[in-house]
Amino acid sequence: MRKFLCDESGATAIEYGLIASLISVAIVSVLLTLGPQLEAVFQTVQDSLQTE
Image (cartoon, rainbow, N blue to C red):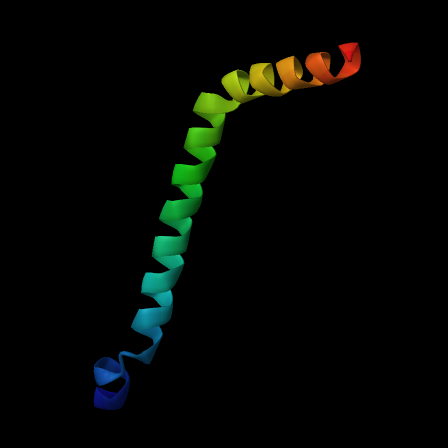
C-alpha cells in the first residue's frame, strides 16, 4: 500500500492534462470572444479579392 501512496509517476501526467485543458479553455474563450471580429476581417478580405 505504501508503494502506491509514494508513487508520483501518474501525478505528472495528470498535471500535464490539467495544463492542456486550461490552455484549451483559454483558446476557446478567446476564439468565441474574437470570432465575430475575425469573421468580419476575413469577409472584408474576401470581398476585396472578389472585386479585383
